[in-house]
Length: 276
Length: 338
Image 1 (cartoon, rainbow over the protein chains, first blue to last red):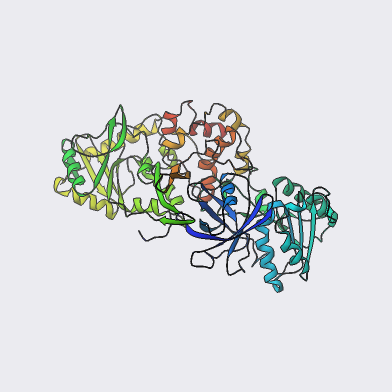
Image 2: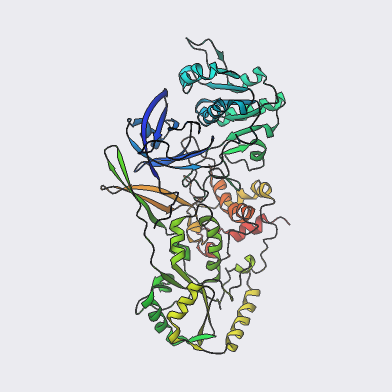
């Protein structure tokens, strides 16, 4: 048989492993011949696997404007992710994708002032969009990034944030951590409260990702300030096996997160049953 | 119409199986299952097989791909092979319709090559029903069991089996047995069809209504208070999903053989507690959510995505097999918005 099948993966080589936080590592993946295994758009995902251990869906953290490699920021929280965290550089894994829709970077987001709101590992999918926007700066308005985590150590890729994002023109970064700690003179408090405190202009388009509870309170806060649901995008995650709407488990109502999502606008998500 | 005397059917099976592997419903331990034909295997008189015909195209387990691990390196072995031609004889109209439902999933882009391989090489010869049972409700979904779909169809009037081809594959099957067929009139067959239609109209589930279902009232049905009572007795055994000709959910698992990794696709069931379980939690925590998912999918979500077509063919297997006598008919009757 010579037809392709999406269930048959490609080989990816892990060429770099960055320790971001006590439980998050970022893995750089290229094809054995060098270069990216496939192209993607910001917000899309890929199935990574260690054969014999398991396979799971991860958002692609790197921007498509990166022409050399893909990166995945992965939190250690289960069987497969534990194994991934134990890998050394040079290890091969399997990879297939890209799956799902993407943030509408070439349509609805174009020319807009953008507000990114992320909590913890929730920055992973948004980082792809942030760096895409930074690399196509003329196509977008002002960028504001509100990012929070439990502690300073839990901010994913803090180095890139302070040495690159914070030095960009037209990019405002607001960091916060849940509890005060030594060596931190920035904001302390939860993300939803911080967003309200910052009172961003309501002409912005919002991209939010983080723990469900953070998203819930952030959305309520945004509405209080005067944002509408049609201005807010998020990205979802449910258990998946196939990635193409056939294995039958990642649906919310009649929408499959793997192919109709993972990116949803809040008004679209609101029309679906509350089962996620 | 081309026909063969009933007492010569084994000769027909022998001729057909000389060309390609043939499966027919045969009795085993008191129930009927599709069985590879060989001398001595007799056609069952049962109305239908316990397991549906989906098994031939979407088997309970199948090997997707193999891996060899060598140090840090992985070798991927695409073990797919072109499937050999085969014929399934005696498929009922309900099961034949299930393909149009399965194909909206498996043949939608990106095409599932495993399913397509078998469909391309499988010939479905259907058999018209003459004795529909009280658990049958295919008519509710617009299926006429006296005029089954398929690559070719077969009818019986008690004396002869009559054949008609609908596709090239069906014609190929009929050609492979044509030396045994003779032309004959269908007057008696028409009488049998009329008698069957008469039984169909009097079946207890003949008037079950699908009218209020479909994608329109998605949240209304999802939020119905009736799910609690309906799901109360569900054991979560998954029998309904396994015997269902249209249930197509699957799991992917790896098995370490000691000499490489085999990746398998296996049937899965939305009725199982770990179906949606993730490291951070489970969106369907209780049997209520899991039970609701199965019926919402068939009656609401599937039609919402497929121009109103339901994900059920009324074969009645879940009615006869559920250990606690819960089934889609009870759900439809309870939920129906009048």
